[in-house]
Every structure is written in C-alpha cells, then in structure tokens.
Length: 173
Image (cartoon, rainbow, N blue to C red; front, side, top):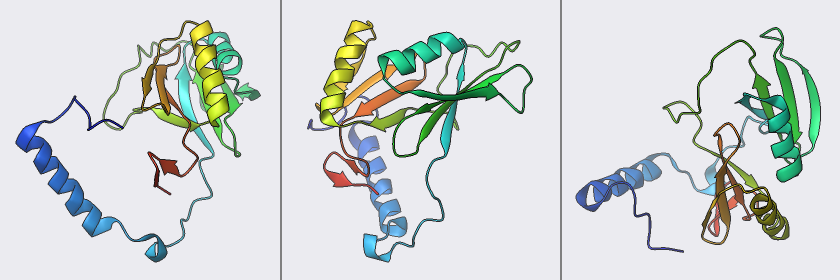
C-alpha cells in the first residue's frame, strides 16, 4: 500500500483533518462487541439513471457479467423502464431511464453518488479486468485490489477483490 493519497489536503490542513477524524472515531465508533445489531436487512437495491437501456444492459450484463434479472415500467414515471442486475448475495443494482427528461451528464454533488464498490472473488476480478480491456473501458488500478472505472453514463464503479466486510486488510463491518 502507498504512503497515502497525493491529492487532497496537505500539510497542516491534512493534519487537522486527521485530528477531526480521530475525534469523530473516539466519539462515535464503538468496539465491535459493544455495537448494537443493525436494524437493516441489507441493501435492497441501489438505483441509478440510464440514458440508454440497451447500452446499459450490454455493459453490465456482457462486460461485467451481472445478469439482468427483471425489467418493468417504473411506477413513478410513465414510460420509464426500471431494470435490475444481480450483483450477488441477494443485492441488486437497478436503473431507470427517464424518457423525455433532459437529465444532463453525471456530476458528483453533495448528497449524490461518489462510487459503488462491488466485491468479486480475486479470480473473477482478474477475468473482469480482462473483460474491461477487451471492451476498451479505461480504469485505474489501485493497490492490486481495486479497479475504478465509469459506466457508459459516467457513474463511477469499483471492482474490489477484498471480501465483503473487509477493506485493505481491516474489518469494516
């Protein structure tokens, strides 16, 4: 692993951010044995927007090998298609198209999506990296465990070979 990020805060600003993080952790992070059970069963689905249903299906099903599992009309917007991909462990990645709306390109904004990290076994990670190469999808490889790239509409994705609940050798859940 590297010594840390080269982008972002540096010097005293970074040191102050580290002090704030340590303070938050001391105030809010409980030892595993003291944490209550979560009220959630899991993520039912994460929903993104698609400007082109067929292109999205080809990318997620053919390049990333996430099977398309269902497709029906969106209950909130007539003519919109709501469709789902299986990303393992009962989790779904869903999409809507919104015909007739000019949604504009993907933008990172407060309250918006930064990226979706999807865990895959190491052997599948290597196969999917080759699939991205064959499809000429550019990616950034980090720490020999993560591939960062964008889908056809600009949503940022990460394929991570760490097991669910772990990151960089630490247990996070």
